[in-house]
Amino acid sequence: MLRVSLFLALSLSLAACTNLGARDPEQAELHLRVGSSLLENGSYPQALSELLHAEKLDPENALVQNNLGLVYFARERNDLAEKHIRRAISLDPNFTEAKNNLGRVLTEKKQYEDARKILTGALQDLTFVSPEKIHLNLGYLDFKQGQYRSAKTQLLKAIEFQRSNCMAQTLYGRTLYELKDFTGAASSLDRAIGFCQRNSPDEAQYYSALSYYQIGETRKAEVRLEEIIKLYSSGKYYDRARSMLETMRK
Image (tube, rainbow, N blue to C red):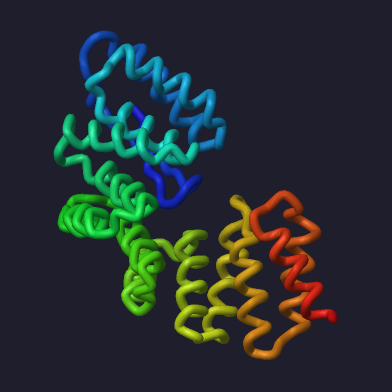
């Protein structure tokens, strides 16, 4: 069986598992596998259809509930994401990956105290094979609360486990920017651009541009902004990049 875990929206991983519930386990596993693959590839409507089918075949399967939560999270339905991930944990109280996902969902819902409690508890599971996921979500939580020094510590731990993690490197660079370490931010964000090629690196590029601008390297800032405008016209940072570039050239 497949388990999907979310770092941030679209950061997915798959892991093997062998525990399925009753009813029709073989068919439930099939739909879970297909749905998880579609989720990993960003085909959310199709993933939701497959996982809902799996749920009908095996309504007490914790993995199905977790992955349903991730689909709803990706579709920005945090209410339904929380419902299904909490259901996964109730079915399997030792499901640390689901607890990590719940902490992220609660962070997005600005339920920061509850998110920290869940994530801190999840970190106590010394058998969990991917603690960098929890450190990343704790770093994100700290960042959202403006606790940048704590965020820096957590994100460094995540990077120590997995240096090539796009989101950890990007968020670390943004954290350095907020701490006014603009030179360090530019360096970290440039690394993030390289690690983010499978995803859209425009966030790292935009904040790299801001960092270079802050240290007076305006030509490097312009190059980053020009890349966003050229390559990511439908991206989140396109309008910001155009506006900043126009302002710089006045």
